[in-house]
Length: 100
Image 1 (tube, rainbow, N blue to C red):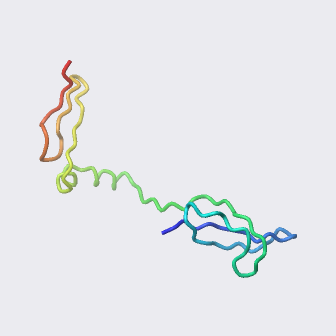
Image 2: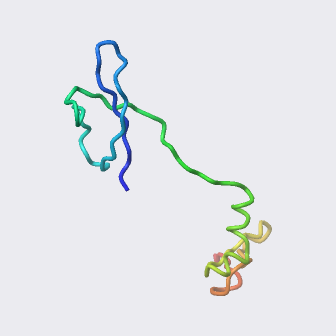
Image 3: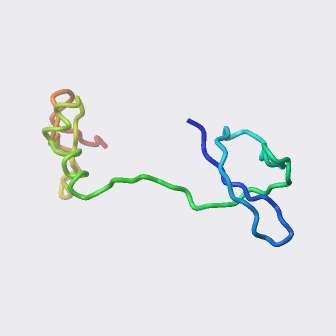
């Protein structure tokens, strides 16, 4: 799916029609309305991002059960020793330490 860009027909009174066109990222902006042939300019809009993020969803996705089910391992660092201990996952070592 390509991004959708908004364009405005350039009218003398500044009240030109605004319309949208789906174009590839590398496409050159259009300069004329596809139907009327009138000159147009691209209108910059804030991106429409559909982010459904919540702390609860993050906790659920990063839970030990979900990580195990998805085949991932998680290691957490012990601040006192600097050793990383496995807190989720089946594969890999139980701990990782930096050897000097």
